[in-house]
Amino acid sequence: MTDLLKLSGVHTHIGRYHILQGIDLAVPQGQTTMLLGRNGAGKTTTLRTIMGLWQASSGEISLAGERIESRATPDIARLGVGYVPESMAVFSDLTVKENLVLAARDGPLDDTQLDWIFGFFPALRRFWLSRAGSLSGGQKQMLSIARAIVEPRKLLLIDEPTKGLAPAIVMALIECLKEIKRKGATILLVEQNFFAARELGDNVLVMDNGTIVHRGEMAALAADVPLQERLLGLSLEAHQ
Amino acid sequence: MTELAANDPLPKPKRDLAPILLPVALALAMIPLVGSPSTWLTLTAASLAMGMMIFIMASGLTLVFGLMDVLNFGHGAFIAVGAYVATLVLAPFAASMQADSLWMNLAVLAPAALLSMAVSGALGLVVERVLILPVYGQHLKQILMTTGGLIVAEQTLYALWGPQIIPMPLPTSLRGSFILGDVAIAKYRVLAMLIGLAVFIAIQLVLNRTKLGLLIRAGVENREMVEALGYRIRRLFLGVFMTGSALAGLGGVMWALYREQVHASMSDDLTVLIFIVVIIGGLGSIGGCFIGAILVAMVANYGGFLVPKLALVSNILLMVAILMWRPRGLYAVTSR
Image (tube, rainbow over all chains, first blue to last red):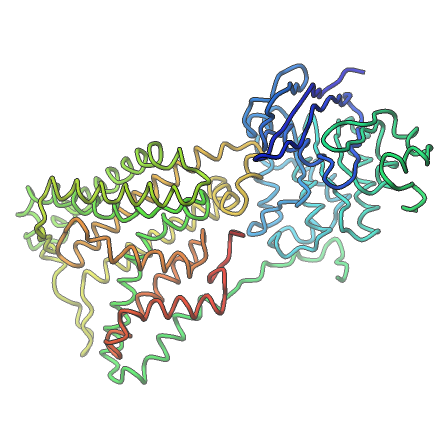
């Protein structure tokens, strides 16, 4: 399995804070890699650094063999990277339709793709002409993910999609992400919900204090309760 | 939330009409206070004309504020430069301006206004590249740089044209008033209203019917996410800044004709009004800016007529009242 995304010795400073302290990671093509860790471990910073929203102070980031660490965010997005931020960041003054029109950078919205998205998120069809700001938190998250997949992307960077959502919506999101995965997408997914992580992850990376402290298969971590407790301070049982 | 069947009609977006009704309510409330219907109509027409001119000058600034998060205290320079460029163009064609033919007058005025917009827009390009680009994200430095730029621009105008006031008479066909019964509405005010309305409609069409407009609206709200979708927002910044500068230049020409004079510091008083309009409208909101400009002009005109002593503070009071009602302005767009 080839690695679509690779980070080698990546450091990121924000102001005087040294957040990422030498990250080495690889995201294999066509797989979902979970990025887990306690709050403040550096997971969001890792995604933002890959996306170019924060500049890496040193180290190398490559996407499909192409160096991207000094590229601007729009150029990285144009290489086929979709980003779903933790804050969802839907454009609340725009309608659902306008949010998706904007996300379809290379042309008009594809009806087949839209139907596929509406299959998971029927609320988006219902509120097609409503302002995104009037949607509920779960619907905004659906829109945020829909925006990232409205066109084919090489890599999806998704930051805590289940955060603060009702269990029924979490299940719908998990099903959607599974389907995206089945279509062959490569995903780097930050998640605090261990149940969701177990359902979706092929591989797992655990971060602490700006470094990767564990890497392996998600199934192995899900089966090893003492390891979960040591790395994350919790066990899967707590999430069931 | 109740589930809708697959074939149910999609819900229509709700409109926030309260700010739109505000100037209407204010105008109606003034009828008994003003007393004479003809005076009320004259004041209302004057308010709408003044409001349109302020809107034209403020519309670019609100987008610059909202989209670029740039505090441009030098916006007034584009207003003054626009007006001075118009004097240069109009001077050799004084005879055409004095001809009693609307078409001859417009044949001179329109190119003068377009050239003023072009020069102000080009100046905007230089200002954005030289003064703004190095200080993106640094508000204090933006204030210092743009205020410095305004001083330099004003002093350059003084150096080139001198400190004297330059007359800029209205063309003959735009002098006088339309008389409707005992109501007189100045012809130039009608033209100002039409141009302001045309600019407003054009901006709304671009913002709401084009992908470029979607990008601007989205960028006002969350620049970072627009970039994460693959759009180079810096180019958009530059385009908006130049357009805003060009509109300020157009506003400068219209204001100079309204006052029939040009001087280097003509934008000083206007800048205060423009900032009030941008703040009460909601940073980045063109609709809010439009309503805010009309409100500011109404308060200035009705207030000046009813309570002249309050004229100086009336717009500040308006701003306080609006912000107490809606702390982020009439139509909040950005989270800043």
